[in-house]
Length: 106
Image (tube, rainbow, N blue to C red; front, side, top):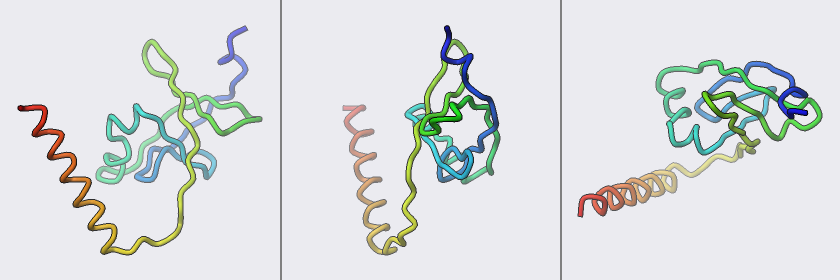
């Protein structure tokens, strides 16, 4: 028996915070690699079809050509981050990205 046959189908929304389904957010490596959340933040949200197990919503299943990928539940922290610390974090992250790019061309 195919596991997918036992799943329900619905629609989730790609947002800047993650893939939103029933007030829960999900992510996976494909979404991160393809910049889904940044695109949603810049261009607006969009819908994607998903499959899910009604008894265990910790995982969603997304249909892609030739494969099914899983997205996993994430928890979002509502705690406010100090803007100065956030700026330092993003500067350090950008410096790391630049170093990685520079290493590729050496």
